[in-house]
Length: 217
Image (tube, rainbow, N blue to C red; front, side, top):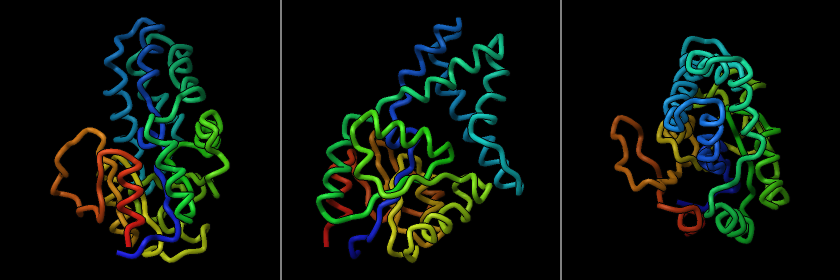
């Protein structure tokens, strides 16, 4: 596999550490454990909208799910506002710097917003490494529908085969592969690959190791 011209990153959970949101659930009187179920439900509903030919902004979909779990709209907004202060995972700075040093272009593509993605990397002092911040709002389909991946490649001026998608979510890597991109799975949890999905081209337990695999001739 030739090294890609550009690496496109998923944002939520791939770059960002969502765990601080658990404290926000507790602050509104809900169990911290609701974070995992809520985020999974938000992804489910956004992907279901895409599968049915429809669309909802990430905040709207996430808020609709929170309103089924929390006592007030203010509590839901308190959770969602936490996205504006999340940190990156500890392995992210080294991994992004390795890709940049290797001459690989870097972009993001999120089911969320470019503002959240940009703020995340600005807080980490990494914003200068990212060429473009992209989200799915222009094509109005959540990943893993094919339209967001094709849109990102058009915006970055590359053919799909020249781009790699890095994500912790197997469904996102699968979507990228189906759209013709290189699929790179960041398997932080050490989990087996779900065989219902197209296998990734490369995988690793942390981002520096994954970056090395991607850039290997």
